[in-house]
Every structure is written in C-alpha cells, then in structure tokens.
Length: 401
Image 1 (cartoon, rainbow, N blue to C red):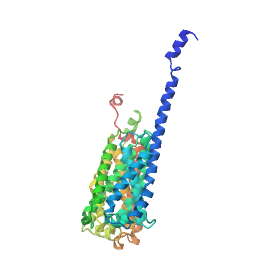
Image 2: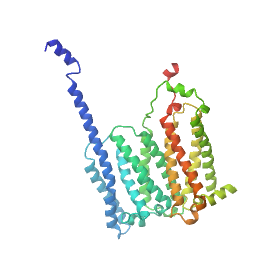
Image 3: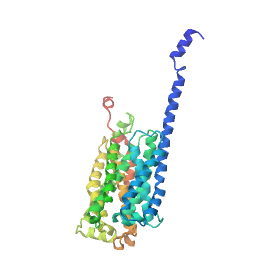
Image 4: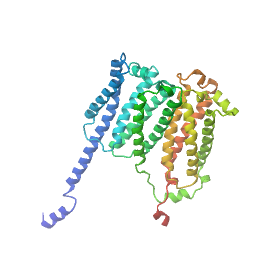
C-alpha cells in the first residue's frame, strides 16, 4: 500500500472503526448491566412474599413491641437483598431506588388486600390485628388492591424505562395523580373519620413514605416534556375551529356534564337539603354518608380540584396553544382512575355496612354513571397524548414562516 493511500485511510473512519464498535459494545454492556438491575428490582419485590410469611409466623403470638423489631429486621433484610440483587451497575437516577422500594411495598399491600378478603391466610394476620383500623375498612381494601396491582405495574414500567435510558414522564405523571388522590383522601379521612382518635405510631411511618413520594412527584414534574411535532401540522390544526372538531365537541359536552356531576356530589356530602340530593344519596349512593369519611373527603376533593380542572380543560380544548393540557390530563386521569376504582369498590364491598351499600335497584345506574365518569377522562387523556398538535405553540421561526 502506498504512503498516500495509507494516510488517507488513517484520516478516514475505516481504520478507526474498531473504536466505534468498542464504544457500542461498551454501551450495550452498560445497558445489559442496567437491565440486570431492573430485573433485580422485580425479584426484590417478590421477596416480600416470603418475608411477610416469615415475620407473621414469628410474631403471631408476640406483643406489639415486636413490631419495631420486625421493622428494623425487615430493613436489614432489604439492604442485604438489594446489595445482592443490585450489585451490578445501577442507573444514576435516584427515583430508581424509590420505585424499587415502592414496588416491594406494593406487593405487601396486595398481600394485605388478599388476606383481608380471606383469599390467602398466614401472611399479614398479626399486622391486620395490631395495625390501625383504617386499613380494615372497605376503602382500605380497595387502595390495597390498587397499590398492589396498578401502582406496582407503573413502578415496574418506570424502572424499566430508567434502566433502558428512556423517558418515563408520561407514566410518572399518571402515577403522580393517582398517588396524590390516594394520599389526600386516605390521610384526611383518617383524621376526620370515625377512626380519627385511633391514629398510632405506625401512622408516622406512613407519613415518611408520603414525604419521599412527594419528593418523587417533584422529580417527575421537573423532567422535560417529550412531545415533538413538525412545524407544518400546527397551522393545519389551528385553522379549524372547535365546531369542525367533532371529537373535541363530544369531550366539551362531557366536561360540562362532569363539572355539574362533581359539584352535585359535593353538595350531597355537605348535606344539601335539596330533594334531588337527598333522593340520590338514599337510592343510588348511600355510601356517601358512610361515617368513615373517605367518600365525603373524596367528593370534596373532586369538587374543589376536579371542578376547576374541567373548566381549564374546556378552555384548553377551545383555545389552541395551551401547552399544559397534555400534562394536566395525565395527572387528572390518574387521580380520577384511582378515585373511581376505590369509590365503586368500597360502595359494593361487604366491609361497608349494609345500610351504606348501593341498593340492588340502583346498582345499574350507579355503575353506568361512575364507570363513565372514570373512563371518559382516560379517553380525553389519550386524545391529548396522541394528538397534541392543538396544544403546542409554534416557535418564532414558524411564526415568521
């Protein structure tokens, strides 16, 4: 080979190609190590099953003081397990570790729900006897199932996204709404309900869990949005008024009706003397008067927060350029999904006193109205996430063009 040819090849990418492959190999190796860490989170969450059975067997005949010993030992076991399962390189995102712990606790909540309904036995018997009475209510049952199934799935999806280096902002915002709704209703219901005087030291542990989760919510909000769109589609969408968008017209009708419905149920729990309110509470949703106060708090949260959201969503569908609309619908749809699941389940659950359950004659209308009230926000969220052109503002370059 001549000197000039060799010089040209050295200046090109041909002789340096092994470096490129080494870089790709290193990236793939790092990704594989992160994936092993994600698999470790899944295995770590499943370890809650034998751990729960072991501690229940050891403590079933013990005193309440043994709870603190069990808690410290559980933390020790989790630390050793995490050291073993996550010994390889883990992602730098701190939420990876938060969601790993939350996934473990979600499986514990699922075990609690299954044992409360006598589907399994011998895993959380001691805890259910000695814990605060709030967890044994119908609402406590439903949030255990929600956290053990839906939240658990979201934690695994977000852990998988972190390990692969992808964005998990959409799932994270949905989780933020679901978590905040659960926390507001559960904590306030514990404080003002019939069990308000029985708040024990375990409630402080729940507060620490809430504080860490709220910090995780702010971390999710701080992530940059991932919506991308071409510059030519924005003027096309903006040239259409709302009457030329039949799907959005249907959503506007839904938002008007949903606003009226959430205000109406808020008035019902506030003991409004109107005949409509009294008849609705008696024939269709007597659970709104349950002394546990969870339904009352949930309806008030819906009236004070969902009501303004519906008005903002109406504005976002009518006026183009509201960039906050997709994020807001994600948060609200997660919150309302959790709220309606817990409300419908608790209204029909056998743990609810018979006088506060939905009467058989009104169950069909109750299920129809509440399922639509919970599912239509998911449809609106899907519309905003998959077709966000209406909500994005054009850049200055696009305006000049």
